[in-house]
Length: 190
Length: 190
Image 1: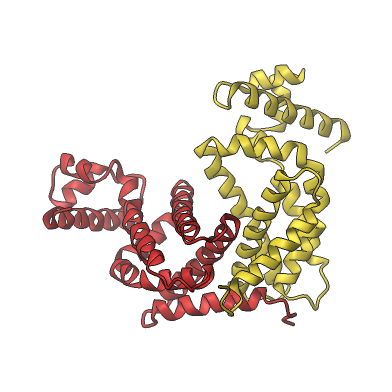
Image 2: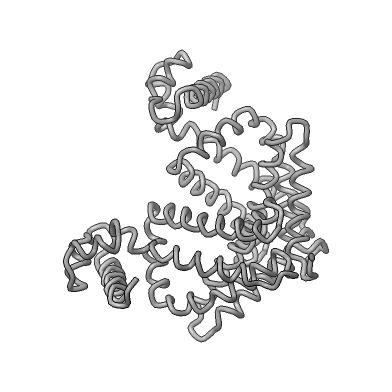
């Protein structure tokens, strides 16, 4: 996307989030968002198919970044280490989007229909992780299990990071991955 | 539910699954299902709010069974062992429902809207697991992570079980739980 188009897109996203937080998700229309961003409705629809997509269109970029990071992981890494590596590599994408992701999460949390959509998008991310691991020679079942474990760890890490302004996402990722190991270690924990 | 009502309910479910598989999910109506089960539409709606619920209403029974099993786990079990115990205890519920669950899964797999609904129901199960673990004194974050890991393992186990007629679900549960441990163990696997 040309840089100007990217700027307009970002402005539309910011305007949408601002309006959703101010007035609630339902009453806001694409026309309101376009007006608030100072563009025409037609421009809005060049960037997003509907107002819901304003919240979800970033996933493709994120998936592409993850795929890239997965394929660049050292070849002697097992699936779990590969996933940790990829998520750590994607940290800058998360950091760059933090101002967008936090209000986005609050809006999604209050709308069941958006939550279902968010889950579908998360499944797309998981599918991308699985296929990248399979390309690295990991059996499909292990890849699927490892991807779901990593998604759970990542979700945990991002939540912790959102709650604490000054922390580093990478540290939370490492901690969550370690906690998965500790929780599932065969030794009793009590 | 009285036994006769339970029988009618089960007959409606079987009729619905049969029709969904035969004609596809969309064209089948509540009226078709009621007719095929030999009851009135009114009876259908006493059991299910709509045709979609025929596929999803069993989760409440399943959640109740899991909650019961979680609270009866030995008190020295850590969260992971508690979850494995509970899922193994719930095995008879799965076995009793196998004839229903397999076609159900095929129908859901071909309809994105049903998949979103299934994911929401799965989240309800996860929420129940988390709150039961928290009641046992497990910190909420660990409970949440452990529940998601267990759900991933369970999903894997059920898929493997569906694929192999003569296997035991309990063995697949143990294997999947072991695989989670092995995958996330700190030692490199390659």
